[in-house]
Structures are given as C-alpha cells and as structure tokens.
Length: 93
Length: 396
Image 1: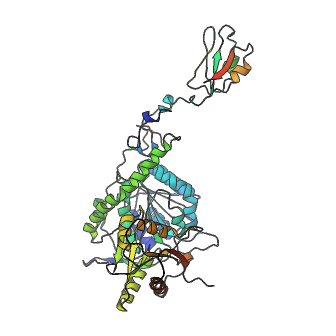
Image 2: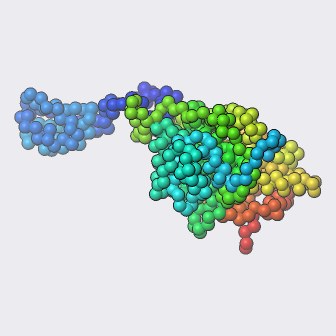
Image 3: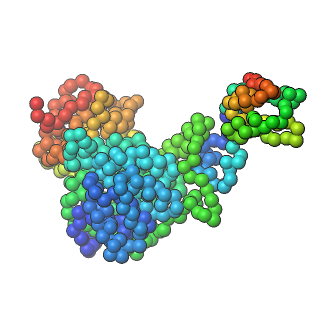
C-alpha cells in the first residue's frame, strides 16, 4: 500500500460521499490475492473450462488461448484445479 | 427572562414549545415513532401538519431506528429535518445516531431525557443521552421551556453551517421541562425566517447529479473521515458564538456554552446540566445570604465540551461538586464528572472533586436536597484532595 499517495482528510469530501457517478469502475478488487494463475500456453487447448468456473469472472477469452485479468482475479485457484490439461499453475503474487 | 419589552407571553409546556419552534423553523420533514416513550412534541407536530399550519411531510414509522433512518434519507435529499425521542427510543436509535453524524446530516432532534430500563422507569435523568454520548452529535442541555424553544432555531443554524455539518440534540429533562407549562416569549415568524433562511446543501441526493452516499471505507480511509468529524466538532464554538450573538440581537436572550453564577469568590460550587441548574442557583442565593461561599456552574453545551472555560472557572475552588444524573458503572465517576476532571488536568489549582449521583429515575432535586449536597461539599473542604463519588439521598 502506498499510503502517501492517498488523499488526506482535508481533501476528502465530507461524509465519504462520492460525488462522481460510475467510480466503481476505477476500483480494482484484485489487490489482495496472495497467489496468481500462470498459463502454460503450449498446454492450453482453449476448452474454456476455466472461463466457465471462474467466479469473478477474471478469465479473458482469446483466439487461441485464455489469459487472466489480474485487476479482478482474487487468486482462488479454481481455474488451476479445474483445468483438464493442467495448463494453469498458481504462483506467489 | 430579561425581556423588558412588551412581549406577549404565551403559556406552553416544553414539548409544545419545541413543536412550535420546529414549525417556525420551516422544516421539510418530520419522522417519529408515535408511541411510548415518545413525547407530546411529535403529537403536537402531527396536529400542526394535519391542520395545514405547515407543509412539512410527517412520516409515522414502526420504530425509532426507522424514524431516524427516514430522517437521514430526507436530510441527504437536502431537507430540513426534525425528530424527537426519549429514553428507550434513543437507545433503539443508537446505531443510526452514528450514521447521522458520519454522513454529516444536520438533523435536529429533541431528546426528552429519561431513565433507561431496567427497572422500568419513565422519569427524568440523563442516562439515555449519556449512553449515546460518543455518537458524534452536538449535545446541548436546556434549563427550561424557553430555552428549549429558543434552541431549536439556533440548533439548525449551527448544525447546517458549512463549517460544522453535524447533527444536534436539544436535551430537555423529561417531565420537569417537557410537561411543565411556562410563560414563553415567541419569535415573530418574519424574524424567524430572517434568522433561519431555507437550508442550502451543496452535497445532496439529486437525480440530475448522481452521487453515492453511505460508502464503504476500509482501513486506508476510515480514520480520515473520523478526523474530519472531530475537526467539525472543534468548529462548533466559533459558530456557536456567532449564532447566539445574532439570536440575542433578535430576542435579547443571549446563550452561552457555560453560565457561572456567584463564582468569583466561591470555594464550593455545583456543576450541573439541565433543569437542576435553576434550583442550584436558587439555593446558592439562599446560602450566600447565610455567608456561605458557594457558587454554581451550568454547563449548556456538553458536546463539544468547553474544557478550557470549565477548567479556568473551577481550578481555584476548594471543592467542585458534580451533579451527576447518569451513571458510568465501574468508572471512577459519572460522565459529567469525567469531563470536569479532564478539564482540571494539568492546571495549577487542583480542587477536590465530589461526583454526586442524584436525581436518577426522576427523583426530585428539591432545593432541600441541593442544599444538603452543598453542605456535604462544604464539609469535604477539610478532607484531602482527590476524586470521590457518592450517591445522594439513597436509602440504606
């Protein structure tokens, strides 16, 4: 956490009101994962089991293989467990 | 009251006085739970809404928790909002009290101060508000119906000030103030409109300009918003001074955060909140005639507490008696005593402090009982300094 970069109490709108709509889009919720999925592209068959199982969803579809949206991935590892060809491994974030 | 003009006085109970002042404050919204332990305040308000004397919306709800929640919504929509409660009702509001202050809603609420169960007791003491002491509301205790009336309009001015933006409780002793009829000097409506113009709110619920209220803040932001509230509380004394001066120009009735009486050469004094303060002054006057060096200090504004002023006035005494109408069981003394002792910390004079618990559950604080408390204090001057707590008038 880079605490120094965050606004101080004088700058914040009182009552924790968010005055602009649509700001949830800017909130990346994947910053507390401890492990992240890594893809072995050679093994991936693009079967999309991981895409179906991911509760977020943080699996991004591609023309040949999948990729991960680390901004929202919580590192649960379901994709790695469900992958039928073991193309996904979980590594320290 | 020092009103020497040919003011027309109207007989009113404290509850009726508050209801009248609320209507004169041009409120937009009132919500209340209309059954026990409610006061006549909202009964009168519903009458006035029904008879068309005000265009305010009145919403009956099923509990005090909902009453204050409805008020928060109306206040966030930019309205001027009022509610009233008492005792168990305030306790049921507890959760929403913190929401109100945290969301910076300048709601004004009259609290008829009464005891909390168990045992069940519907009479006056300060247990209810002291139980919600730390909820972030400005807390003022009035002495009589006139003060209750006068403080509603002033409360809105302070609460709605941009430097403050905090909710405000006008505390009035249950029955002694709420149900006693007094002659009241009323503010002319044209003057009331000038003193209290319609509420202006920059930040409010508006479909044309959507905003998010009641947001989640995690450990990296929560403290900053609490610091904002603390700063807003610290801005109250300045705004209090401006508003009360302006009100005095209008009515000749001038209010202070604390009111000392015969304190210049006093050796023993009683510190009190609310309706007991008048009785204490009356007893002081009588004891002074007997040559006893006694004085009185009425504290009107309890939050933010005027520590500096209280400490300055009390440090030269031999004995400070705190008239405590609520308990903090297991603590060294009651809640008022706690602040009084805090005010005396690190001052050159260190008087003995007697925290005297009296007037619980509506037990009468008669002149005789106050005189007895003074005599206990006068006897204590020979004992070493320190803090003692005792119950007055409790049967063995």
